Length: 126
Length: 282
Image 1 (cartoon, rainbow over the protein chains, first blue to last red):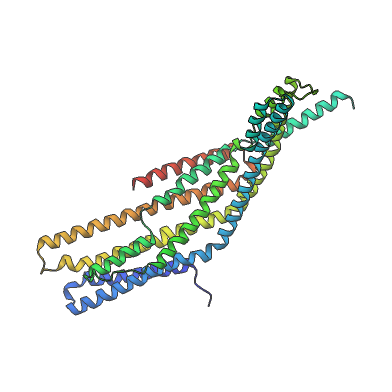
Image 2 (cartoon, rainbow over the protein chains, first blue to last red):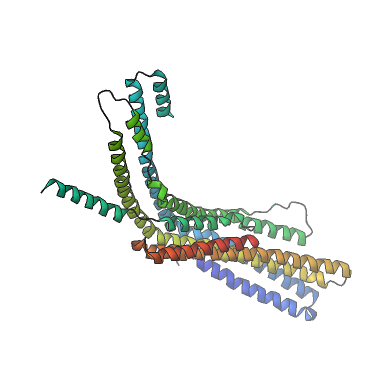
C-alpha cells in the first residue's frame, strides 16, 4: 500500500476530531444519567482520542516535507538563478566604476601628481 | 548605399531596440514587495506546533495535579515548525529575488564617473572633446540599458513561468500546515480544555466562587485560542491572495507592459496591504 500523503493524514485527523467530539458531546449531554465510573471512563477515552488526533495533525505537518520537496528544490534553483542574474547586472555598474578609477589613475600618473596617484589607487582598491 | 542612409538605418535600429527593450516593470517589483511584506507576517504569528505541544503537556500536568518531572517530548512538533519555516523561507527567498531583478534601478547604469574621468583627465597627446565624450556616453548608456533590459525581461519571464507551479504548491503546503494542521491542533486543545473544565464547573463539592472562577478561566482560554485561530485564518487569506497575484502575473507574462496586468497587480498589492493590517489587529 502506498504511503499516506500529508493531505490524507490531515483529513484522517479531521475525522478523528469529529468522532472524539461526538463522544465528548455524548458525555456532556448525558452527564446526569452516567455513573461516576462511566463518566471517568468516557472522559479518559475522550482525552486519549484527542491526544491521538493532535499527533495526527503533527504527523501530517511533517509529511508535508515529502510532498513539498520537489517544489522546494525547483524554487530554490530559480531563486539561485535570479540572484546570479542580479549579481551579473550589478557587476556592469562596478565595471564602469572601476574603468573610471583606472582612467583617473592613468591621468594622475601622466600629470605626475603624486597625491592624485595615491587617491586614485585608494579608489581602486576600496 | 549613401553614407546618410547608413546613419538612418543605424538610428532606426537603435530606436527599435530601445522601444522593444526598455519596459517599465515597476508594477512587478511593487507586487513582489507587497508579497514579501505580507508573507513576512508569518514571523508575528503567536502560535506554533511546539508552543501548542508545550501547552497541551502543561494541561496534562495541571489535570493530574503534578508539578514534578514535567518534561515534555515535543521533538515531533519542533520538526513540524522547522518544516513549515523551510517552506516559508523558500517563498520569501523567491520574492526577494524577484524584487531585486525586476527593480528598474538595476540597469540604470551611471556613466558620469567615466565621462568625467575621460574629459577631465590628462592623457598626454590624446585630445578628448568633452561634447563628443558626453554624446557617446549617453548613447552607450541607452544602448547598454536596452540590451541589459531586454535580457533581464526575458529572464524574468522564464523565471516567473517556471516558478508559478512551485510557488502555488508551496503556498498551498504552507497553508495546509498553518490553517489545516496547526489550526486543527488548536481545535483539539479547545476540546481538551472543555473535557477538563466541564467536571470542575459542575463539581458541587466546590464553592460557587471556585466554580465561577473555573468557568471564567475556561472562557478566557477559549478566547485566546480563538484569537490564534483567527490569526491563522487571516494569514491564509494573505497566502491565497499572493497565489492569485502570482498566477495572474504568470498568465499575462507575455504582456508585461499591458495596463490590464498593471491594474491587476496593483489590486493584489493593495489587498495584501489591507490583509496584513487586518492580521496585526487580531
